[in-house]
Length: 265
Image 1: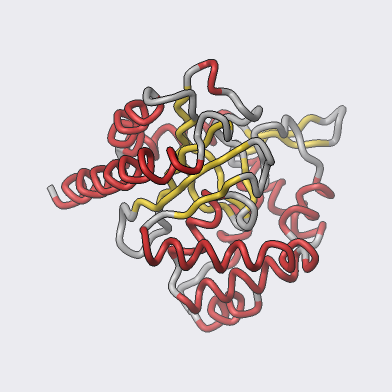
Image 2: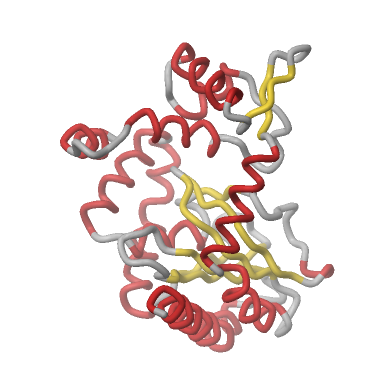
């Protein structure tokens, strides 16, 4: 994290207060109806007095609602308005969803679109048939970077220096976990460089297999992350690599091409 902070301090255009306010909003997960200032401080790493000032401001701006009886905050409808506006303005859902639906119809699998979110990946779109539910995950869910295919796809897609900085943060956050996952991340980087996608065969959940790749939608921005996951009895290693991987990559490239035309039209 020190590299990131050093970069921020050297960047005179960087507004730290804005970044911290966004950290507060991003700290809420799909299962978090309410969070206290203490919980937000723990999740963001910010001092509690700082968090209190930001939650007060976000409440005044109607991005957070305060539940006085509980002494806790929840996301307000204005945040939903922002997310819906972003989806409409970028065209992400309309462009990506048809290809995701096509992938989901090949078998009882889940097809997810995610974005990097600090030390995790957050689902922003999900397509699956009812019988394909493997884990109780939905739009808004956060997945860990090291253990999952979709998280490793992001790590593998980074240039060496930003990847090393992010790995340093992961190692600091949980040294024991990183020691276990470091070989898997290294293998994912090699796989991505050779094949354009990464795999996760039973390494996050024993019964779950997944493959993932990236969609580079806007130059200079974080990529979108596209994954296919399913029970190992359905998404076998052979089927994942021989049937789904080519289709995953072609879907990602198709979305990239359509996004490029959107921004240059």
